[in-house]
Image (cartoon, rainbow, N blue to C red):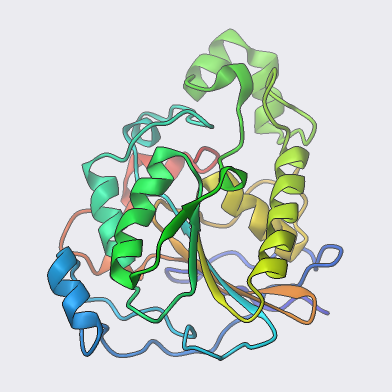
Length: 290
């Protein structure tokens, strides 16, 4: 299948990578318009109970039975942490959300309502679980933590700031900047290993959830791997697509291929009354660390 357009979340953005990877689909624009507000009907009780402001339209395309032989997947990156703001590598260390991150998580949850999803999976790291919790409340679906959706393990450099690596381990820093696909960061994971882990996770998700709508709350490195798997963009090429804190990415799988409907949707963060637009915060400059 030839590569289609990837619809990005906030204004024009970079297109997809150079064609589909083996056994995976290309991105494709959805052409689906947003629906009306989600606080009516069954969603009203959830709005009142959780304090979630549903001023933003719910996610489209998640009506029951719309893809009986496929899978609809919604990826959500966790909200902001203090380490994101400090440009410090979290990897698989367990840094919690900060106040802004918790607001972002509530704003993301406002895009969901009861009967919109069938399963919610999340990384078992705290920042992902904290982001997934209000989403579970909004939908009434139990959140299932799974280690396979964890961030990349950064080896001995977990907890370091990039500036510290550049100063104390310049050779390693150069390989990070070059996106060396085999660099395992002294006991961590290489980019190729992360790609293989997430490829296997996606295959298992399709096998388990055929005909269903699934949310996965995870990390920047995981979303990066998914985008590259779907578009065929090599892990060694620079990231030229956004992965903001608490962004939402919609994909679907059908006939053996993944397709991107919309990437890095942050409408819920732009519409919020709070100052939680991730594009204007220092965390946005740290695209490599989730």
